[in-house]
Image (cartoon, rainbow, N blue to C red):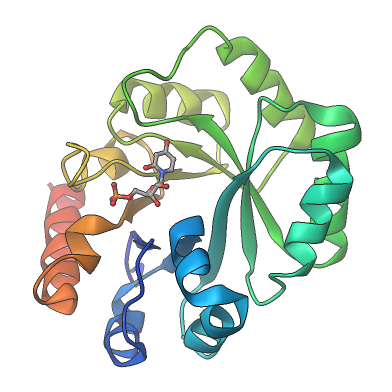
Length: 213
Ligand code: 3DU
């Protein structure tokens, strides 16, 4: 059985003690710009360095030329995985980033469908082509759009799907996994809870119960 289907979106610092308490009940930790701007790279690395989670995912939603994205990744080498936008295209950009990440044994996730209402589906075919060409470890599909999860799961076979938007953005815990996602990304509902560890445990249980039924 999986340890957990939850990726903690850490956009606000949590203490090392709380993270240690949670590590055995998390699949991974996703760190965002708000956290790194708060703590700086050095303290972020110190905080996360020896945590026993499967992936530390940097979510800066990279969208630049290859050279710049590679230099961002280089400065965050303690992380195992990086999220980039897919709309930026392949040549001179995602192809270079993917090659660099492969050479350094790091994972790439591409944004496929965002969770917010205003995300346009006008570019779906283009985005799918980019994903096919780059062949990342995984894709990000909003957990508020369950039909999109089902669609991308059908189109991309066993590719890992990670889904934000659960809890605070209105998605119900477990629904994204039941629709075909591998993991649910959850931030505010955990880090803003009075007891983040208890919140995580409750969410894990809700997801597992839904998956079993
Ligand atoms: O809404 P939450 O606090 O659970 O956080 C969601 C996280 O997922 C947050 O870090 C945000 O940057 C990320 N995310 C989305 O919310 C929506 C997307 O489409 C992609 C990533």
